[in-house]
Length: 99
Image (cartoon, rainbow, N blue to C red; front, side):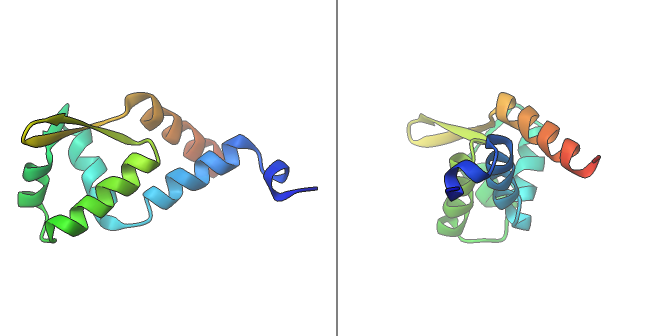
């Protein structure tokens, strides 16, 4: 049996979400975004005591996991929670911890 067929799609997706949640900066970003509809990357840079390049890497991880999306509104990027994926992540994690 190959590795690709051994794990369920839900297990693989939960692992992607868990990886995205594995750093406190990314958890903070998601909490920040969940309290408002969207924000600009500059707002986050002012909130967090990290370099902008580091912030960009954390935003990239969250985007790759599908938990946020960014829209370019020149010269800034506006980030929002990807609501469908956010809900899916919550359901997957809840089902994992409630078993």
